[in-house]
Image (cartoon, rainbow, N blue to C red; front, side, top):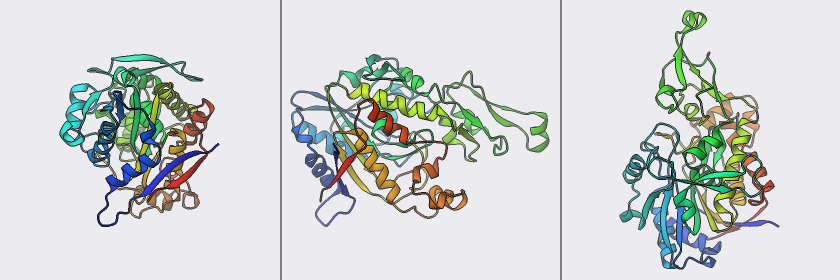
Length: 383
């Protein structure tokens, strides 16, 4: 059977608002049918790395939190700590980052709770129903303590997984630091020496100190030092891929990215299995890279709308189809790739055009395989 995905566009008549449309969409999708009375509801959101301006504004979160409170629930915003260097790798700097980006009880009407605690070690080992890659998942304790899970996702591209949607927001986002390492451990980036300028920017973002600048005789004769990744120290978080301005770092086109996507689907299964859950994705300011970056490039497509439903697989597939059906914006990385990469101009898959070493389809197919949801959906328009 097809899952229902409800959506509305970003157009607003005088007297209406996008926040009002968000509430209409989630109500039509069945949000009010859930039992929130006296229950703790975790709203899984990405607070955004400071310096990035593409993350969802706190206004979206407030609308969801207010709706939960009106139904008798106890909402809180949550995310888990990151593996890589930045301002979200422990609870203190993570909360500072959330506050700086506008997420406070005054703006959202609820508290921020970092799901895996002060140092990212406060987690629970959760069984993965039908798990193939993971039999258990390391999930932030506060996430699992909640009675209900609501994902509120900014849909965008991603350098390792192809896209960041509900599956990534939940699976990767709810994994503790140990869980994130488990998910990433099969992926190892590589450096293309001919493209590397030796700028050293990637070194600053490697939490494992796995990158160094080395100089072989051949490299020294041409252009000096080049980045080198120590596979023994690398945990495969992929941060270096996104921060390289010269596209000198990527991942081998093998099973590693597929394994990462499959593990994220299994971690999502661990988070939602056996309790009420609901999913919302906003397709606006769709950037090529994750909101984990301390910067954001120009949006690659026009804003599309608000999507919601009970099935995270169907929701992600509907968002993917909507993004790939949209025109590429000129002067963006997507436009550049379509003009410069062989066959990209005729490819209707924007996500693969931007990140050709990724295959987003494995998120959908593996999610279906383990019973997380279905990629078959019926799109219901809400005015």
